Length: 100
Image 1: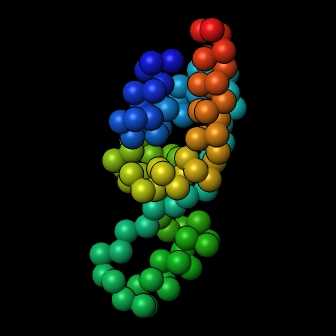
Image 2 (image 1 turned 120 degrees about the vertical axis):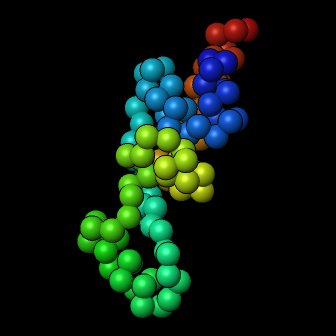
């Protein structure tokens, strides 16, 4: 459990999700897509948004191998939308009850 706590506090959300799986907690993807905008124009934004909607643009954060690849904000959104924070709280609560 200590390793899990360290992964969350050090912002390694992918590793934290893997620890949840090891604890027998079912996880799922939140559906967050990371999109880079090298040129910040309305046209570029519209083009990228159209591609994201068609699943032809961007990187699915849950499929990245590290928090760096998905971006810290991408993984915060991913973990939040997938319910990982609630699942982690449940895991801590169960562990605390065992330790009493």
